[in-house]
Length: 288
Image 1 (cartoon, one colour):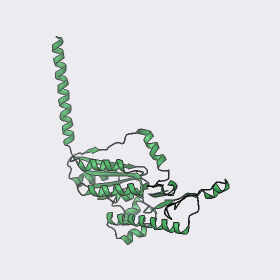
Image 2: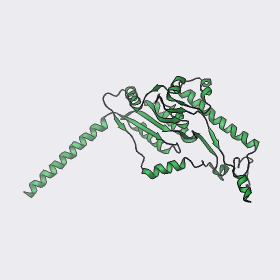
Image 3: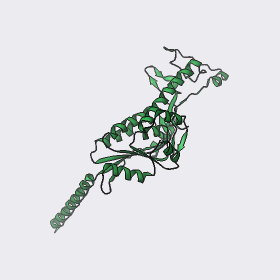
Image 4: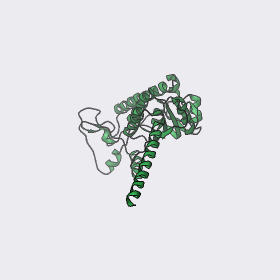
């Protein structure tokens, strides 16, 4: 009797395994849409690049939604994600969906998409660059503290917080900001198929509502995530309800706190001999 019961249990377990296996295979055979979520300040690109690469290699993922709810962030990561999406777009449709805010670096990224959606009240645009400096020289002087630096290059300590910025240094940083700004304008002009002169007219750092941005050609359509999803499904030729693949970042609440804190820490630019400007130079595409 015990042997019979044991056999029945084994048969039941095997049937469950087979059913689950068939269901899993069926689900994996269903065409999918990948969703890349960029939420909060753009501090690093590694996680996003990994997800995009995974979407590119997964044959069952037929299209990608880029969901943006970000005020922007650092220049390099924004450009890296933009370039990765341009490569992805060669093989799969990419549709951008803006949430409450998608400005500066986030807007830069959105320009890589085939179609850009925004809500009528979304804040977007902010085509500009900001370089931030801290000058603590007068405060230190009152405390009787002075700082000196020895450099192997006249501009190596440009932007240091321990003395006033010279006119030459100011021109140097203005040229730097202008070049980065030009790169931003070029990306918007190419991504949105707009004449460069038209983009320049709006590229003074202003933010726009989704409705204003549509009138300017900075976005394509007004609509939410569902609208973007339907568009991606149609572009990919998916019949029926697709699977939605949303990779999750591990780390929980502490990860979110760390990201928030990092977004307010001045960016450090490290070379072979330490940090540029004592780590107090902050170059970003972001809303302040």
